Image (cartoon, rainbow, N blue to C red; front, side, top):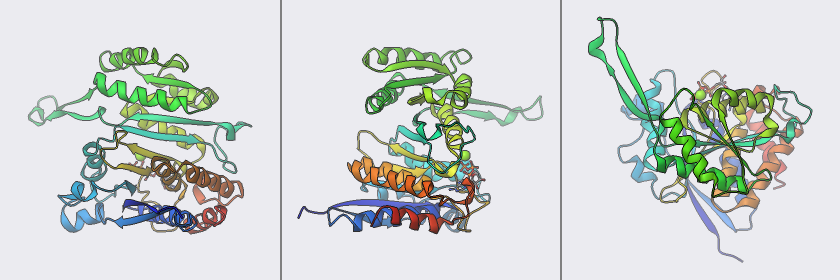
Length: 360
Ligand code: ATP
Ligand code: MG
């Protein structure tokens, strides 16, 4: 018998539906491990950080929280944010702090259409649609550069500047990541998204680097599309997409659009990767804490379970990831759906159906 490979995972359910969907993902992964005849196991440690923790301690995470996380093989994250805590405190105090300090510069967000789920596109061949948004996750519009001139108050109003940072190194690494990903897909194509007609510095650098990197990948088809046109393309010609690479803000918006087109934000998975593997990568559903449905068993766990599948790929277990994807398709195809995608099943019903569909 082969030795057991044990993967140490830090679970951070954080806020709202985060707790429900992380519990679902853990249950599904534990079922997979139990069925592996000792080939692999997951060793979980759960961290209580988030807005509730902030209300008790004044901190979103422990001061030495990053040290506590550093040696894990991965972080499995729920969702952060709650109406009682300002977003910039909750987001920067936990999720973005982890992303930035662990240099998780590549964020991948697959857009995957599922059987049994009606897309607002309502195309006959919806389930053939499948593309990936690759988001630059370390700089761009979310670099935190700028400031407010409070002294300007009362004399014509305050002034605020919000700058975006683009570096050649940052652009090049995310584009190479996108091209390498395209080579693993049936359709070898990368669409680069910019707004270089209106933003004449950063976005023009982005375009220049894209053209240069593309020369190293002659086997990959390319296109450069403005973000406004790309929004229309997501809706009108999604069959033309395979890998879409975009800056932090543009990709954030496009991936929410993609998940809505696939049927629900609750279905969308994501991975925040440190491709060099110097630090743990983080896997989380795209959705937020959903205060409107939190604690009611209504949350769709598929985004979190799909994120667990991305984590399995990161662990070098692609066959297990494929089993999870198949279980997701079997479950939605059988009409076992939460309310956001038109069904009546609870989070637990869907989780149990996923485990049953794994055949374990
Ligand atoms: P954030 O600012 O953290 O991204 P948000 O304001 O964009 O959050 P979400 O919390 O993601 O909002 O919720 C947006 C909508 O999507 C809400 O109506 C919510 O109920 C719904 N939603 C989010 N996640 C899920 C889920 N897992 N299952 C079902 N519905 C969901
Ligand atoms: Mg949001």
